[in-house]
Every structure is written in structure tokens, then in C-alpha cells.
Image (cartoon, rainbow, N blue to C red; front, side, top):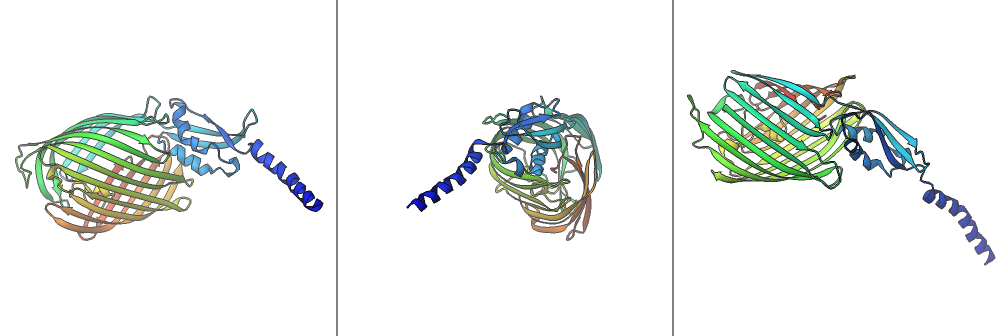
Length: 413
């Protein structure tokens, strides 16, 4: 019996110091944040994506995850990530040095297409009031169209307080709905008034949901040379619900991403029929080695009862092998590619990407169609300007034997 008592006492002597150090000495745990380099941005904007690291073991901190969290704000570029002892000796401090991107700028726009040229400009602020809010106002003018619009979106920062958005746009245009070879299937003149408002609530750092309401009025105008034009305009009120999940990771060159989006909209016809919209998108970008990643984009759009005026472009399913003027009621598409960084400089990262794409579409004129082809692009991800990226691309549709180029602003990294 004495032997058993001595063994028990020996185990207590061994365990007590270990238990004491684990419970009363939190020296290795991150207990606070310190951010330097902020000028216009409010501290809570930079702190919010970093709160997920409080409570983590400092020795196991993933610095690339810190980098990715700050890059996801769209307005901050991380320069340095360090761990230091807290001054009161209670834990560790996550210290981050950042540089604010240029967020207020005029943006000239020039679009050259077959038979038309449009030009204009927008004033943009992607960090309005230092809250990471977005504001734009501007317009475009061309030989066959003009448009003007403005919008504001507030990013949720305080815990439990939703973000919100407002948008308004008016346009006059000669619309062209085309086939896979950019040949006109419909041609008509249209005035388009569109307004919307919505609320966004972040359930977690990665999951958020939103509710929205919109009003759209599309008014047909007399056309000198119409082609298969709709018989009447329409007025609809839309009520939508969306949910999205997004995670990201930085590899030193490119930002990997795993995201899912799902949305449902009911369009109540005030003038014209009512219809529904179901929309899904998925993105998987994974680094195989630093600076070299695989990109998978998927999408589906189902619009039973949609009118001719409200059919959608192939951008809804993230494919580039169809002209932007192509329209259909339903889509299902996927794109699988490889991307490699080419040059990294202080202004950003230049990369090249090549992908193979496939898309099913169902439209009111062409019916069921299946297209596939190859697409390539040069992307420049900006580190100093608060626009995520510039992209110049080219795509070839194999069944249609059609080659086209593209230019885009604002795609995600």
C-alpha cells in the first residue's frame, strides 16, 4: 500500500508543474493586435480580419494566412508580420505593418467592338470614409448608346451590424443579342432603368448572407432596322436571397481561393410575366507550388419563364469562349486551367493563365447548345492600386471556329 501511495505522489509531483505552466503561463498565446501604417483606413477595418488569430499559439501562427486575410480587404497590402511579447508580459502581440493602396482615382474607360466605339469615365473610391466602403459615379457614351450610374456599398465592420448597398443606373442602347460567332440574332433599341438595395450580414469570417430588392424598367424605343425584337417592354420588382462562403490563402505570389455562392431571385412582373432565377458559382484555386496554381471555375444559371429582355450573358457562369452579347435562359459551365506567375515587382504580380472551358446553354432562338474551347490571359494583380486586377485575354470556341479578345477590370486575385 505504501508503494502505491509513493507512486501516486510521484505522478502528482511530475504533473503539477506541467499543469501549472499550461494554465497560468499564457506566454505563447496571441492576446492582442498592433497595426501600423494606417493613414485613411479606420483601425477596426484592419483589425476585423485579424481577430481570428487571437487565442492561437504564436509558435504555430501561419503568416501566409495573416497575409491572405489582409489582402482580402482589397485596400491593404501587408508589408511585415511579426510576433512580440506583450508589454505586461501576458501573452504575445501580433504586429502587422501595412501599406494602404490608392483607393480614390478617376478611371477612364474605352471600349472598341465590331462596329462601335464607346468611351467614358468613372470616379471611384474603394475605401470611402476609411471604412472599406465602395463608391462610384460615372458614365459612358458611344455612337449607339450611352449610360450613367452610381452606387455605394457599406462593408460590415462592427460585429453584428450588417452592411448595405444602393445602386442606380440608366442607359439607352441599341442592343445586339448574338450567336457564338457574334452574328446578330436580335437587334432593337432599349431604355433601361435599374435600381437596387440590399443588406449583407457576415455570419462568420468566411460565411455571409444577403437580402435584396430591385426595380427594373425596360422600355422599347423605335428602331430603324429591328431584328426579331421583343413585342413589349417590362417592369419587374425583384426580391433576392444569397449566401456565400469564401476562404483564401497566400503563397507569396498568388492568392488561392475556395468559394461557393448560391442565390435565388423572384422577379414579380408589374408589366409582363413573373419569373424565377436560380444561380450557383464555385471557385477552387489551389497552389501546387508557390506561384503556380490550378484554377477551377464552375457555374449554373436556371431562369424558368424569363423574358427575352432579361436573358443573361455567359459571364453568369464564368466562361470566356462566348461573346458577351450572347444571351440565353439557362447555362451550365466549367473552366479548368493552370496559372503561373511571370514577374513580381513592387507594383504587383504579372501572371499567365491557360484554361479549357465548356458551357451548355439553352436560349429562345438557338435552343440547346454545347460549346467548348481554350482561353488564355495575362493578368496583372495590383498591389498599390485598390483594383484587384487587370486582365487581357483571348479565347477560341472550337465548334464555332471563332476567336475573340477581352479586357477586364476588377477580377479577384
